[in-house]
Image (cartoon, rainbow, N blue to C red; front, side, top):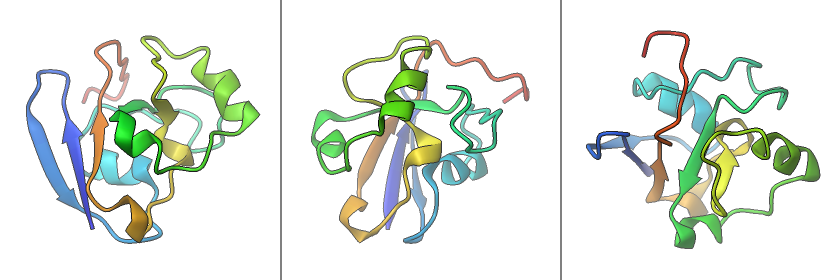
Length: 109
């Protein structure tokens, strides 16, 4: 399956992913500047991404806990999600993910 990342500078990276992969790890493997400080425990918002509207509607609704964390994310939009909470499957092939301009990555990416 394919995932398209739109970087802060507008450049695009198309990557291969497998069903069952977590979007955070796919993004990090591609060098995207997503820190994921809490390692997927949903205790931070450093893996915040913005999905295209049509792709957002293909996902299950975020949990209340995820929505609470998104309230803390810089530059959050209506189609924001935490990438640590998105597990890829065949229905998400072609997913387009934008990296927010306000991303803070202390890992130097």
